[in-house]
Length: 178
Ligand code: NI
Image (cartoon, rainbow, N blue to C red; front, side, top):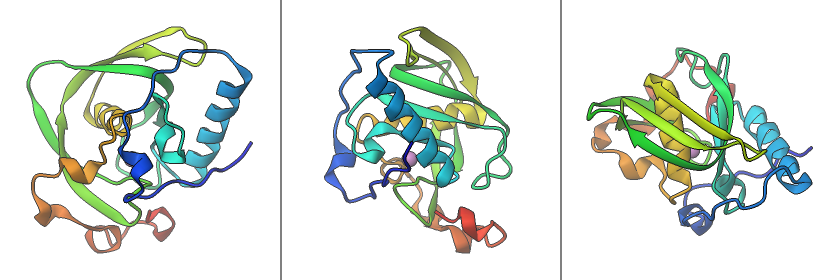
């Protein structure tokens, strides 16, 4: 399996609407997902969307027990999610810090729905339906935004809370500074 190159903000391939996955449980799909996990783990990411490695499919992965880039975050179940649909539960939103492997070295305060339901299928075509809140809900929204060509800086309302990770979080492990 292979650690793939992660595209950075400014690359027009990050701005596309991703295409639905139509074939499941294929060797090519399993190999792609394995590469995505290798790539995410090599970068200590909390999640990764296929468009970030230049594959324009509606496919995201996320999850961790403990994450070096977000040491305060509670665990999020390891998830493979294809063709996702998100539905907010209630009208509450909350702000929280986000980074992105496609925007290395930066963090910003981003408003997101507090609670949501996410639905889609896994790599075998089996339904995935979950409700989430807090950081779990934030990660899902961040990753699924990539499928619509949206990067988190495009969601920031208050640019006084957008900056370099090393300045905003001087105690954070420098290895996690991406
Ligand atoms: Ni991202």
